[in-house]
Image 1 (tube, rainbow, N blue to C red):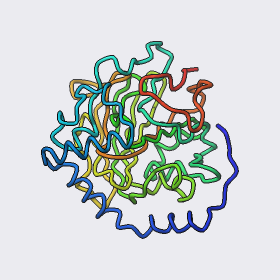
Image 2: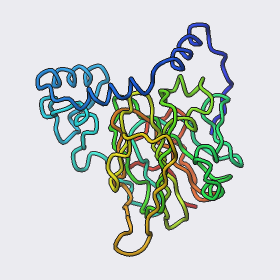
Image 3: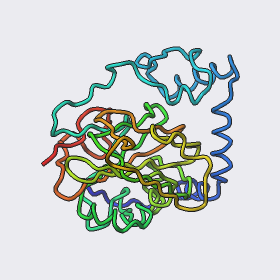
Image 4: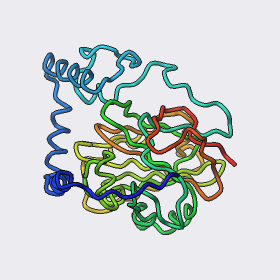
Length: 296
């Protein structure tokens, strides 16, 4: 993990940051969600075409490669890829990256502190909704935060074979999670709305967190469907059987969830579990299925 010097924002940047505090985040997000679900025919197809051009979306790798193939913007945004477009690392000791995007930060969890960006840290207990039992499993462990930009494939996959143990919905803010705001809004990921998923694996516990953001109208998982909306004003926990017919087992590379617009994925690993490869660096491009780390 590379530590970078904190930079004082300019006047213009301070205004930009202040505006994000003042924005009606939930209203904007609800409006974006409604718009993204509308079936407006040629208008929808035109919007998708403009978006794909603006953000250089590679539709050639999608199962449906034409803007006119999608009835809504959301269908386009969570478009599945063609079979084989993202080969999954096969080595049993290798973990797979969960999403396309960029490495926001990664490295050691120092006791219970994770680096957010340039001198900003956030607390493990707070990130995990004050679930102290869960947090204890990851103190002095390792983490990786992956930022998904608008151009990226927005389905999230499993780094390894795992069995779902717990899911926690945490209400919160809806700040944008782009790199600029991650550098300037304290405790961003521990303040935003999120879905925490705890899994059991062959090497111990593993957590994968879907972090919401402005215009991230909803997050979904393959076992529960759309988690939000609705958006209850309290933490909601779901517990799952880890054995028997009702157990939810997911394979490495299998889809586990998706963002309907936006956002960020955070993975947590116990102490002395994994080693990051040299190509995992802050700002590095990630491709789902490539190597996230190697088991020790």
